[in-house]
Image (tube, rainbow, N blue to C red; front, side, top):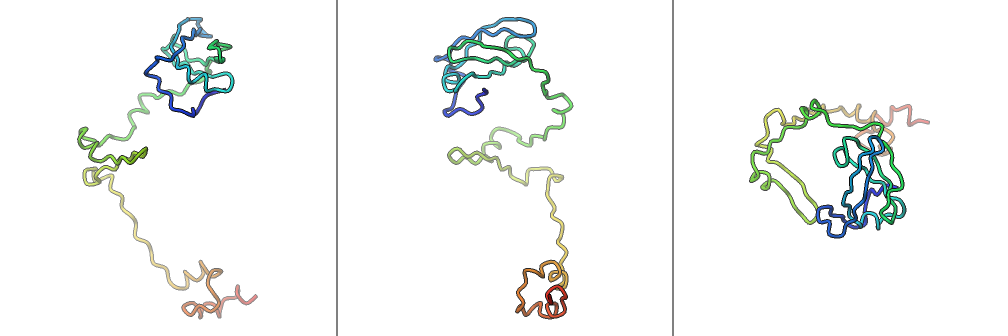
Length: 169
């Protein structure tokens, strides 16, 4: 079972209420004990699945299944891992924030809501959105598109209503 959402926020930085768990890499058998917040395991219903990232124990990524007694019950190798490549990083959106002052001037903070609305004047001209002009439709085109929603007594479309074979049946 994976703990995907906890009922209370778990802060990993203060580990005053933590348990030391001994992990063994299922690939290279390297061992390392890591501190882990007890709240994550105590809030889980059964086994807790922990994803151990590369570099925490060894150069491999794996998953460990930990029970309520903080004992590892099994491991699973990761067969495939998505990683961000240098090419992917190259195409990340450009950061237009010039300094921290500009960033904080454009942040909207309301309770738990956070939004960044940069001043559109500061963005490059290529970022400006140009809306195409809408082509105006004739009354006939409007009628043909919406004929089934137009009331029989509509005065504006009365000529089209009289001559419409779809309405005669």
